[in-house]
Length: 225
Image 1 (cartoon, rainbow, N blue to C red):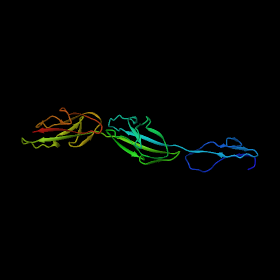
Image 2 (tube, rainbow, N blue to C red):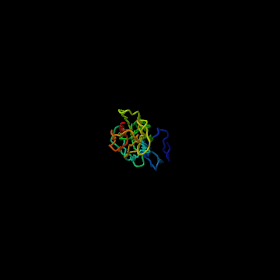
Image 3 (cartoon, rainbow, N blue to C red):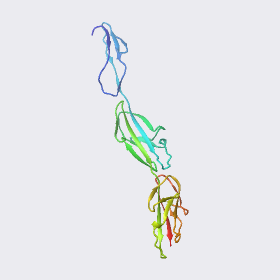
């Protein structure tokens, strides 16, 4: 080339790479402009470094009307079976990773179901990102009231002749009733010609019972003519 100033540049190349600065063995280099004098023999070099990627893991917690109180910070996850990472308070962790394929899992949490969206074999490119979303839904506890009617003295009543109640609200015998976590009370409206026994099963004798997330409890009572 003739003596004088030249601007160094490169084009093309794959996405996800960062270009470094030029270096030259001769001449006067100012940024990307090289000035050559007579007799200069310059070799100019530039390095490209692959960029890290970002694996975004989001958390959604659905407590509904169950009375559950867990927040996103009560859950954790792991990437490719590594150590547990606690979710940040805003429900999103931006994890810097090398380009590659990743699977995100979390340990089971009692009383909650877990569903994953785009969390298995997720490809993260150089300089790019991918998002995995994990949703946990609180499992409402359920309570079933079971009635036994004893007709050994000529009675003809059935369970339909007695009204089951939970917390004073009418419910059907034998049906699993979704409730909130905490204390509840089973009761019934009896017939005057039948004696009522005490509550049993998962209920105390007075019909009281305490439910936690995911519980499926059953309380029993017998009426005798």
